[in-house]
Length: 421
Ligand code: NIG
Ligand code: FE
Image (cartoon, rainbow, N blue to C red; front, side, top):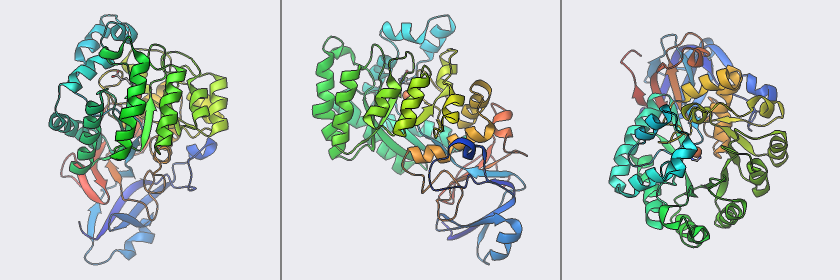
């Protein structure tokens, strides 16, 4: 990697610069645009950022120059909720839903998460790495440079460890950054359907200690939902996870309202994710406990549901909202943060600036990496994307388009659409 890189000729540099904490309220509406911007990078970090007039005179002679050709430059997206390692696909269920079946009906008939569990158990670690690399390319090509990545399709000690090891290899062997989350409490596997507390015991006594000992996860998550993990089971797993030093995220209030937001607040979780059904009481609880909501509109769209989370009420309450794809083979086979931005504005009435803030800097803070990634500021990692747009709002407005022409992580080119830059 050349030591010095200059990024010149950006029509707009969308920095997301601001205070060293997640953005709330009106702060979410300021994308920090520098017109005619430029950036200097040294050893993979941003050394200078400003207008062309400020930065160009500082370019040193043997510096590599990236000419953005009057395109716009943004931070890499940070996707703070994904399930990117799994065997097989569920295109068959997609077709069943198109024919009128619901996600819940398919799950109750033994499909859904448990179908992917069977396919993931049948896959070797090498196979999971191989298919995972394909999904890593999809993320990078759509301008995402960091993802949070959940296990949860193994549901045995060995298969959960296999998934987490596959993630560790993907982190080493691809240019995508993975933040691993242990989600052993994703569903009750077939063999524990009638002995559910035994499965909870397996998570607490076997899985968590081994995951923690091998340092394979930073976070622990659970699917708190009717028919999945109840309050007592979720509490038991999450408090055990905390005692092993894991931080918490929680799938909450996705399909039904059962106080998931309040539970996340009581547990001191970093995030509460989904929140489609969350009401004013839940929003107040998140605010009081400083929990970040992670909203996943593609998982609503892809199962053909109608009810999106109440993003407006959350932003108006002062919550540091995060936007993510929920990429997974069931509810959201959709890895594009660009499309998530479109859905945020059209379905949840988030302004383009709020959605972008939620997809970058707020997401970075929710992963404990707000000081490193999520905005273009001096000292941060040079994770940035050149998008082929005239105005940054076109990212969401011209929908279904692959806007990124070049994606950089730590100042290094990691994905490219053509040789045009
Ligand atoms: O986030 N809600 C639970 N987990 C996933 C769905 C996983 C699947 O269907 O395979 C979600 O939507
Ligand atoms: Fe999820």
